[in-house]
Length: 313
Image 1 (cartoon, rainbow, N blue to C red):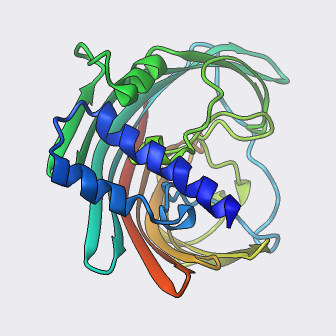
Image 2: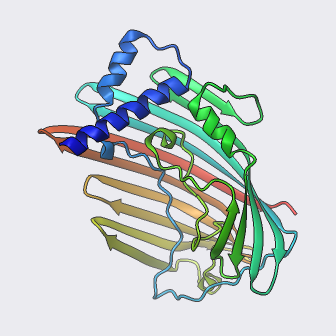
Image 3: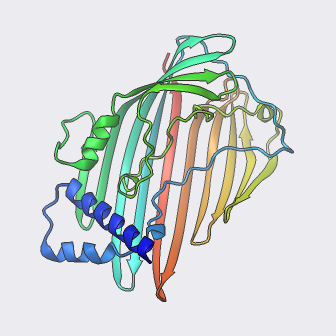
């Protein structure tokens, strides 16, 4: 119980900062309503944006595609996300929706037989958050409100460059510079920004490296499942279409946890020559609940995103 009370205090603080950070002139009744809604348990906040990774099973094959970057190559990736979160208990309802856009540049500054040096820069962020009939708009191309906590976080991200040491099989060996803080707190999750932080051992996120895709025919289907720590994930992929230049892979994903379920579907459009994901589009719906003292708390989140990437040099 003490642990739960501590969680409630944290959530209360974060949600109050959401409103204060927007610099809204709140009325007394709205403050009271907000205080009631912050009694929701932590696990009901559904504070992550669902992103389905492209995976293959052992049956498909483990052969990796070697990256074909050259020194001087440059790519630009823009991610658009629309999300809507509803927290409810009895007749109380608290809704937060957001529209976000993030543009990043990936410049290959060096290329050797063993790997690459890639400079990843966040060029632009635009975000609008709607809550309780109020809104906050941020655009990195315009002056920001220095009294807003959220806008300060945005401004700190824009212009940052992470210099990544990347292996020829798309494995990150080292990262210098940039922000290492993951977007995983309750407050910042409401912005709709995806948590795609660069980490050692992870991927740069530009390509699909499975060489088996080059030989798959239209209609080929495979399933990838993972079960761990009370979480079950089932991803179903299939080749939806194929041309000389691109391969389109469609997918359905189901994630099951003790207190929440997520269903996601979408497509990847992949460049056959380089493995670069030109378009990633997905839609996800997550619902969850928790029972405390025989009271059911519910929450839901719907997210639609589209990511486009193209070579700029």
